[in-house]
Image (tube, rainbow over all chains, first blue to last red; front, side, top):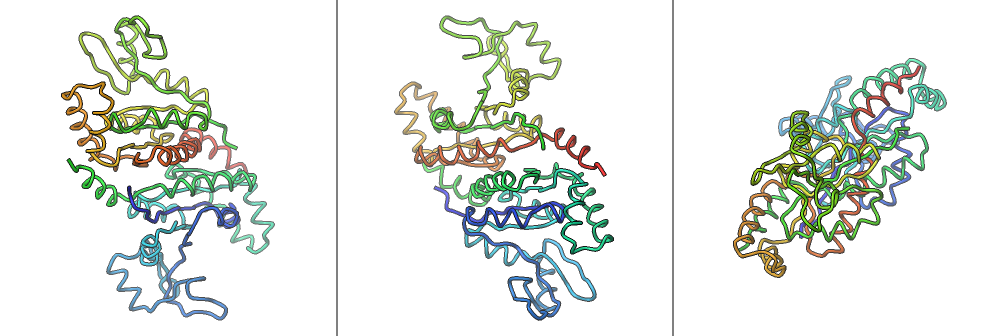
Length: 206
Length: 206
């Protein structure tokens, strides 16, 4: 048999699509998982925790990891680095975990290129743009300017949903959670190419 | 919401991997399905049934369908045409069925090219080559020459398992059936690109 291994589940979709609520709903049913969080060189703020809000690292470590091609993507904001490091991802994979990314369409492509053989990608979307607007308005955490930006971004991203393995229309939260649960459980069955190659080597045993 | 639609499940793997047994085990749990069968121009033999053993068509119909690019693949044997026609497949898809193909690695690539957005592919394999040999010997339906050919073919095909979404090692039939059931149920959640495009058109409703 082929030994168990970690796999990747990519979740994309506009802010307001309900990704966090969906993850919370299925969290108990998908086994051991690691939710990918960003790595940054900015100082930790009060109330923040290492490994919860960010992975906090030194500028030296960050730039060394850029050199070593350990970042899926990174950017500098106000002189601080922010990025998606593959180091904690690889650790979680080696522990057999389901690694969940909440990442945009560009991030999805980067993951596909690096970890495509073990990745299942899902685009989560509200049923309509006006429903998205309604949800963002209701949260009342964002200014109208921020909301306008999110709607614009959502309209751009939804053009690229065909780059995903599955699209989940989050109209009814329970229905959408059921679909995502099903997809996440099946995502576990992906086997990395190197393990398949190993299996093939051992297969020819005559 | 996005309307229901048919999807494709490709099963490949050597003769003796247990594909038929697996399909029988999960048949009651995967909803309405259509098992793709070949189309041929050879005359029906006694005991054969249209739509069970083959789709029997005239040479005129077959060659017209070749012209119309309706064949995934075809070949002539002793002056008769044999091929995998997309016509019954499209009919089953339009009825929302799960279309199951038992097809080789070349057929899998052809399906990926034509129906990739709604296709889930699974390579089913015995745990080892010697176990495959044992199973083929036990069936005692094939001559040693045929068995040798099947083993050679299996060894060639298993090199291409990384072209599949999932690989199922059929060591224990119940375990393998459980995995295939899970994959087949999730396969139902694929949405064709044209329906996604339609959804995207309607999405931007502000």
